Amino acid sequence: MSRFTPSFIFDLDGTLIDSVYQHVLAWHDALRTVGIDLAVWRIHRRIGMSGGLFTNMLLRETGAELSDATVEELPRLHAEAYLKRSESVRPLPGAEDLLTHLTEQGIPWAIATSGRIKTAQHAIEMLGINPDNQIVITRDVVTHAKPDPDLFLAAADRLEIDPSHAIVVGDSIWDILAGRRAGSLSVGLLSGGYGQDELERAGAYRVYQDPEDLLRHVDEVGGR
Amino acid sequence: MSRFTPSFIFDLDGTLIDSVYQHVLAWHDALRTVGIDLAVWRIHRRIGMSGGLFTNMLLRETGAELSDATVEELPRLHAEAYLKRSESVRPLPGAEDLLTHLTEQGIPWAIATSGRIKTAQHAIEMLGINPDNQIVITRDVVTHAKPDPDLFLAAADRLEIDPSHAIVVGDSIWDILAGRRAGSLSVGLLSGGYGQDELERAGAYRVYQDPEDLLRHVDEVGGR
Image 1 (tube, rainbow over the protein chains, first blue to last red):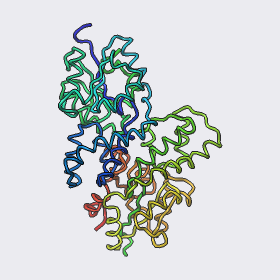
Image 2: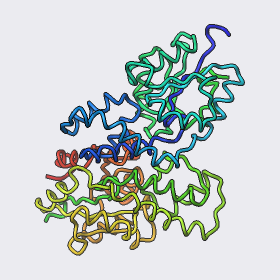
Image 3: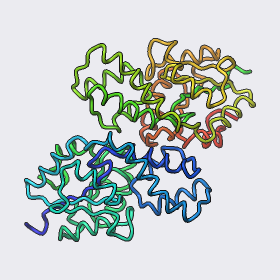
Image 4: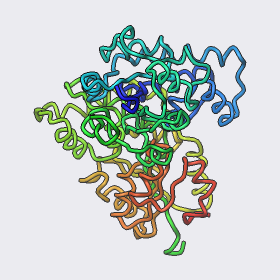
């Protein structure tokens, strides 16, 4: 493999599996449980960022005051509310085909998600990925999640590549921003519900509809 | 009232009440029930358009073949799935204050929704609106819903105004398009989850975050 062979690093929710809207309403439920009413679209635009930053944003935008115990309980409340909805979650069109194609072409790839292994496990199984054979970086192994670059840097490290030869693929502006901060090329997908312009303004080199559309144009971003 | 006094015509879901994401996942459920797997973001971008056009789009994009009986059953399946989620639906921030402000300023307003009265009733009550005193146009009274202009034209007719003196407020590109076709000025809100650029490209004169943000800037669009 030439040292200039590109590698792909994928976000998970909204990029490979169709789970963003379920996560959004699960956060809406969790927040209502602790007495916070936040409009759903505002939650949508924060999905995929680090939980700590998400909580800071909440406290700032709602003016709510939450005890440390409540702040610590929120991830559990969210996970419970998400699991109730996860039955409707499916891989996005083309996700499995895209990963299979890259593997067959000898193009290395990894997954890097702001989620914890506990919630990501179900999604990874759904994609038919064996974490023993594939690189899956979760929130559990880094200090800072997106938009910090740590998750993508950890993935590049495990892929044994320079991050500047990685193509980061994500559906949220937090992915695009973290990809840029890692020194990688960022590619956006519309399948998480952001608008094309939002992803382009955040710095996406290209924007595709979903994994199927990316697979169809993979030679435009360094694949083959 | 001068014949140049502006009037406001509001969409309902995503514009005055925070119900878009629940509607999106309710459609996702209804479609899965009849064997159609459509990515959630694609449903999101079609919410607010006429049910007939929505079904045509479905058949085209998924290549699915549905019997007439199934097509007729979809609205009921959606309504059932929505009602299960409606407990979490709230007015958007500032919605009631905005309507109260317009009433106090003597600025006429109406609501025009692609939904049917059966599903809209709950939202209207939540906003404290008495349909006997206020103009509420639903899908039941027009032949074509958005993006056709019929709903907004019917509202203008009931307001006894020329549609060119109406300011149409909506969260989806279908509202913006229908408002333009009615000859009105269209204003977009981000509270339904579209990006600002999507609404501007569809022809929104201005885009605000939600009803609260519109109220704060109502003098920019003809209010006072």
